[in-house]
Length: 291
Image (tube, rainbow, N blue to C red):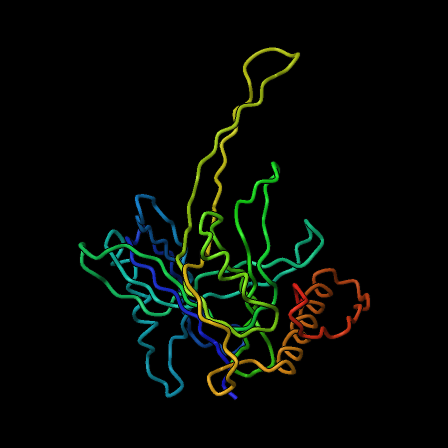
């Protein structure tokens, strides 16, 4: 059964750096190229900075030099020029010793790159399809102000034995989008599209020497804000022939995801402690989360 796995992004902007390197895999000695390219897109008057990762083996299965390998090796030639990058969003799941819990980071994984004209309009868009893992919830700051809404979408891999979880966002000023996404419930198969909003802000703070003397301590730090803002979405997809996820498949994928988390945590802690096996969740519209 072919379940909904829509996952794509497109970024058009100026390539400002390309840090690529070649090497050989330890496992089999095969050549590869990998690295990160930074693209800046001016969208609605604001500069968005996208760090996009690339990887390709040197040769294809039939022994020919990979076209992607060749393309990535020439990325530095495009620095300073406008390009278009298409690819997919990937989840990097890891155990954070700082917070003592599992954490996740979403990365832009580039696939195709091409040069575009200087007059090409900068843009950064995405599309993701899968099943709802966590329903829409508010995110608040220290002043209890809502700065964003989050919804988590699960998506099966091609083998059907593991899933990725993508956390997508809604801008709190987009009331129609908020109301639309509120109609999605745990277990629903949906497809959403939106805009990438990756802003880098430099913040300077001053700490006065209260009760002391002399000049205050001035600190400057950089905030990277990465938003995957939803701007549209499908109705709930119920037809299995067009990709709907059955409840038994969702349970299997969620269980595999949890088991993999336990493995990552155990490896990170290197403690050999047994994991707590939780009961498989039932998919109902009354649940707010499967995880």
